[in-house]
Amino acid sequence: MTTITDGTATTTPALVLSNVQEAEARTLAHVTLNGAAPDVTLRPVGTRAGAHRLFYLERADAQAAYTMHRQGSVFTLTDPGDPFNGMSYVVQGGRLTIEELVEYGRWIVTVPYAEVTP
Image 1 (tube, helix red, strand yellow):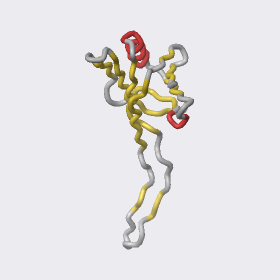
Image 2 (cartoon, one colour):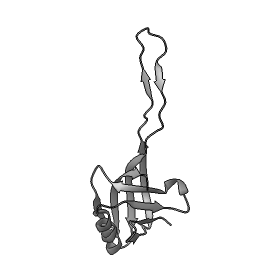
Image 3 (tube, one colour):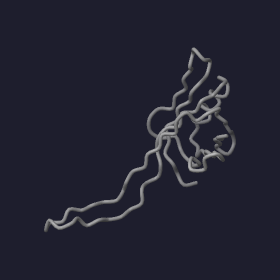
């Protein structure tokens, strides 16, 4: 079960429909003047960024998650079933949205994020 907290409030989505993740490759290859193989500066890949799509069964739970993410906080996502997805993040880039799946009476909160060091 995935949980998200800001240290005060906590939300537990029924599902994380997609956890889009990308990380910037930061290694540099420098072309040399003599045409030989490039000089390479190795750097680790950057932190993750993307969007969490959080699925809720109840409007009140989705609204609470949306409201929680509107605050300027650092959030901690934990998922004991998939520890790779655990992270601390801030809302950054894109748009924070809440969407009703009218035909099903369910809700999706989309949270654009950038991973941060806690």
